[in-house]
Length: 113
Image (cartoon, rainbow, N blue to C red; front, top):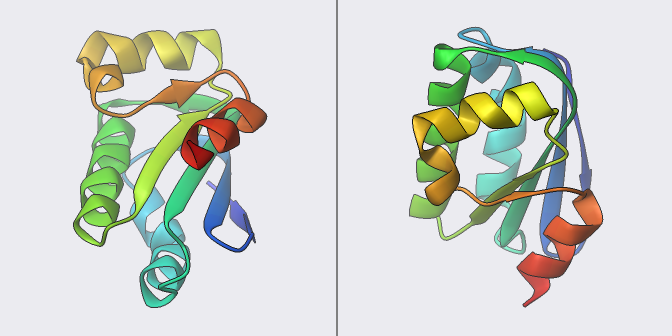
């Protein structure tokens, strides 16, 4: 899962590619450290536009990231999930805890409110 990011004044957008699975935390770690060390970043958007596959371990990675960021006072939302990925996310019930938006623009707007 390649990761790249874009940071604005108070938000960081992580763009994930391919799969979210058990190996994902290792690839996300440098970005998580950067977010934690930058007190100006108050929110994180994870863009799923290029994610083709997520399994239960991938969902666990997202939930752990959510909790970790939340403990550091950083809000996290998700956006642009493919239908099959979103359905799996909903089956687990995590959509009740982690907000998912149709577009990145919708996610940004929600975080500004």
